[in-house]
Image (cartoon, rainbow, N blue to C red; front, side, top):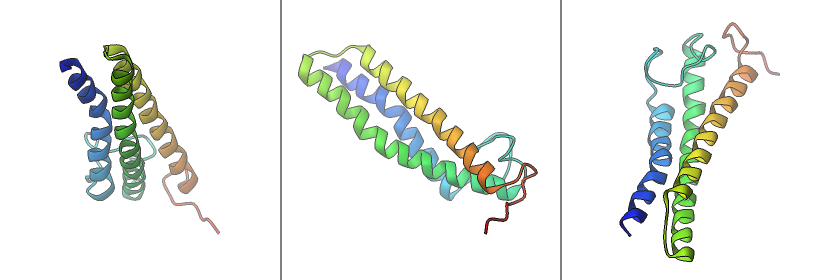
Length: 127
């Protein structure tokens, strides 16, 4: 039973981090810097690309965390209820899936940046 609580905490860390960081990036993103926030070559071109990237990535992170948290907890609980025991392996697989989702969010944000901004950081004229 003790291991069950540990596994529930382990699978909750990434989603909770995404929820908190997503909220902060969406509504309270920092000024452009190289330490905090969504940083890439494209997002640091100017203040407009920085604000857009942090806001958009933050929204995606928040939503992903909200979806991942109950699903991750439910999977661990179902495994425990079905088998009557729990090991570290399911939590490891869940964490790997969560990390892959985080990488996908970064790729999607970079694609969005390139749809809205030119390579020099100026906003594209979309009619």
